[in-house]
Image (cartoon, rainbow, N blue to C red; front, side, top):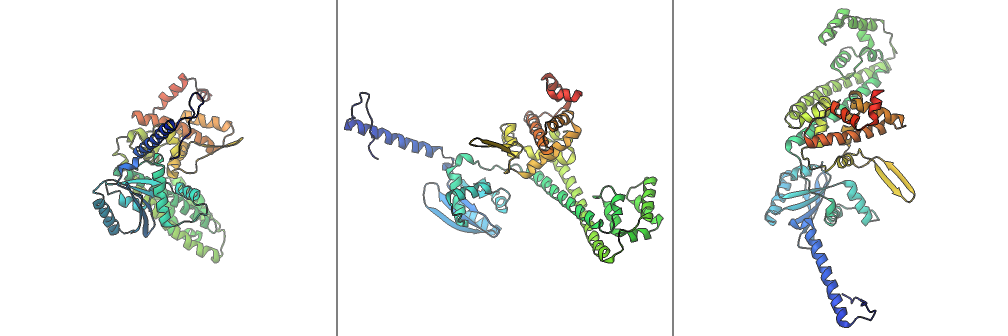
Amino acid sequence: MSSVLITNTQGMPPTPSYNAFAETVCLTLFQLYQTRSHAMNPFDQYAAIIGIDWADRKHDLCLKVSDKDALEYSTLEHKPEAIEDWANALRLRFDGKPVAICIESRKVPLIHALLKYDFLVLFPVNPQTLCRYRRALIPSRAKDDPSDARLLMDLVLRHSDQFEPWLPQSAKMRTLEQLVEHRRTLVADRVRTTNRLTAALKLYFPQVLDWFEDKATLVFCEFLERWPTLADAKRARKTTLERFFHEHNSRYAEVIEKRIQAIKSAVPLTKDPGVIEPNRLMVVALVHQLALLLGHIDHFDDKIAEHFAEFDDAFLFNNLPGAGKQLAPRLLVAFGEDRERFASPEALCCYAGIAPVTERSGNKSWIHWRYSCPKFLRQTFIEWTNQTVRFSFWARAFYKAQREKGKTHQMAIRALAFKWIRILWRCWQDRKPYDEARYLLALKEKGSPLVKELAS
């Protein structure tokens, strides 16, 4: 270490002994800083840290032992037997001491395979975070699987204060989480199939769309399966049509008679077989898909209700305005079981993508919504908030006030969701269900302008 020049209080040049003393002090402070930094690194408690770049068939690994600088590169086949052998070898090598695993995302098959090993501590990394870290260090954008594994390990090791070990929730909560997500996927498929079915019917048989108000029903599917064209429906006897509607719980004689009269008096849109025949086959295929989806959605609803009833916190979300049997379980999943997970409602708003993001550069400043967040979680809050406008007095008044300020529908809903999350977070923390009357009274005591909106 080079000498450090220090001037004394009299402005005289320091003596050699003084310079030696100053150099010793600086060296001691530097060593103390290194020791403190090393002691503060949370990864010292792990026997090793491993970065894994996962893939469908094989995974690239970069391993660093805690007290060594050398890096070990290897590959791991994505086979249950290979993963089992690799994990057992790690356990034997490090005597069962904890090993840190750095891996992209949380929803990859390898994550689920590693959860069963208690000595492995998982540190999921957002793929976008790794991508930007790679670009910062490698401007040429060169990319390779082993180097990505090393970058994952380096990112978590150097910025340990930004990453926390993933503590998965209970199996019961994770089951409910998967059930509600898969159900929402099936609902999206139902909407897509219904839209395709509607588009095909408009080409040759548009009248049936007026005869049935709700397209996502079994009666609509079975009607089209039995009479896929207007000519088929017109050939059916009146008694046959009446019996069909009675078997599908349509008991109003006036409604049945009106439908039958509409069928008999309908005029075909086209008689071109080049249009009717291919679209008839498409409609039959789509109604089979739609009927199958409807049955599976009902089955998911039963399973979700069964699992939702097992949670002690179910009563907090069961009677929320507009929640219902579909959104109440999703709200429970959004908050989870760990009440220390979100230190404040603002933390949950930021995590869920409800809170806006502000960017500033020089004299410019702009606000936009969050691009990186759990999309399903944000969708849960947005869909439920939409429902509260219909079922909550103050929510309707707040939404109306936001629209009068010139906000778009989505901006008003996100602002309302921000307020709802603050309310639900307090109810969740205190384990007390939401009470609309009590909240309205609190608004009145505070002199909230929403009370005037309610009065008007």
